[in-house]
Image 1 (cartoon, rainbow, N blue to C red):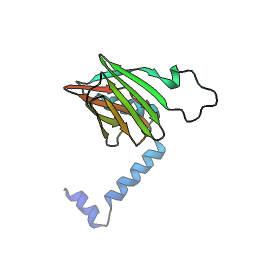
Image 2: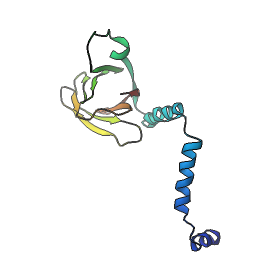
Image 3: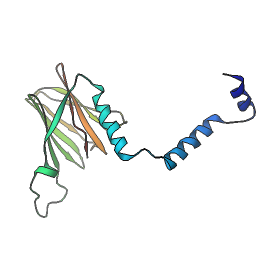
Length: 155
């Protein structure tokens, strides 16, 4: 620590308080643009450079015909990476899905900077979670030696 900073601390200067006030001012006066946040979250998915990216091939919000009068309809998603397909149903109560061809897998539900929720697919490839994803999410599957990461979507 140099003498200049020691002098401020001796005078009762609180550098932690100043840092927090500067962070709050920056958040108000110069917030991070939403598009930049989305790009950063998307880029975080690429930290597994050996992972194959699973492309979204079906999304019931876009591809399905709406049913009149239906409310609280689950969102159905299908991702594909080579020979691996992942079908996922997202509801307000959680998510459930299946890895095809059926195989055991470790699955992480990625949700931005929060720690990933871990799930395990059984020998039939089925998995469930009682916690619905909040905000943008992706799935990282580890099947045998392969790693597959889905595209990021909003829940």
